[in-house]
Length: 369
Image (cartoon, rainbow, N blue to C red; front, side):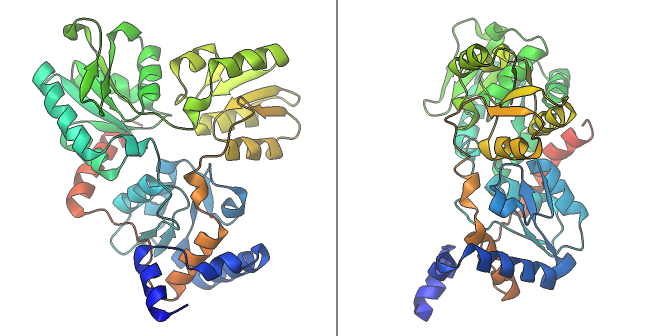
C-alpha cells in the first residue's frame, strides 16, 4: 500500500485492507495484547446488540444510556472505544470530560431510527406545529436520537426518555404542557401514551418527508404528536409472527420490545426495555418457554445463557441489526491499534453548544429516572 493511499484511508475513516487478511486468532490475540498494554486508560463499552466476536472484549455490556453514563464515571479511561452505533458514541462524548476521547470503530455504524429525524426536518416540523398549536407542545426524544435532536429538545424545555422510563417521562411532560411531540420512534411513543391512558384517537403522526400532520379529527383533540420513525429491526415483528407462535407453541410466553408496533405489543404477553427482557428471562423458572421480539444477537445470547429454558425468536427469519453489526474484529482492532500509534481515527466529537443543550434534556430525565 502506498503512503498516499494509506493517508487517504486514514482521513476517510476506511478500514485499511490488511486488517481483512488477518485470521480471527491473530486479531483476538492482538486485541488482548493492546487491552493489557493500555490497561485502565482504555474502556470498551459494548451494546447488548453487538455480535459475539466483539462483545467478548467489552469491559461492560448494557443499553446505550447506561453505557454512556459508565463512560462518564470511569475518569481513568482516556480512550473510550464505543462498540455500538453513532448516536451512542455521541451521548458518551456529551457526558464525558474533555480529556476523554470517544471512538467509534466503524463510522458506518449508524441507527436507521435516529437517522429518521434530522435537525432540519425537526426545525421545520416545530415551526409548523407551533403555528398550529401555539406554546402548548413540549418535545420528548428517545435517547436513540442524534445529539442535535437531543439539543433541540433541551432548548425547547423537553427531555430525553429511555424505553425503561418512558412512562414516567411522558407523564412528566403532560405536567409541563397540554401536548407532546415524541421523536423519533412512533411505536414507543404510541405504546407508552396508550399505556398511561391516552386513547389512540388523540394521537396524530407527523410525516417529516411530506412535512404534514396526519390526523383525521379536530386539531384541538390531539394530545400526542408522533414522529413518523421506527426501528427497522423491531418493526419486522408482526401479528402473523404472534399467530404462528400461538399455533405452534401454545404454552409459550411472548415478550417484545415496545419499539414493536402497537398491534404486536397488544397481542404479546409482556413488553419492556432490553434490560427488562433480560431480567425477565433470568428470573423465569427453569423449563419455561419464551418467544422474544427483539434484536437477534441478543436473543441468541439469551438462548446460549439459559439452556434450561426454551427460547426462540418471535420472527424465525429475523436478522441481526445491520448497522450494529458493522463493528467487527477488524474494525475493533484497527481502532485500538490507531490509539496505540497515536492516531486519531473515527473520533466522535459533539460541539460545545450542542453538548450544553443536550445535557439539559438528559438532566431533566435523570433527575426523574
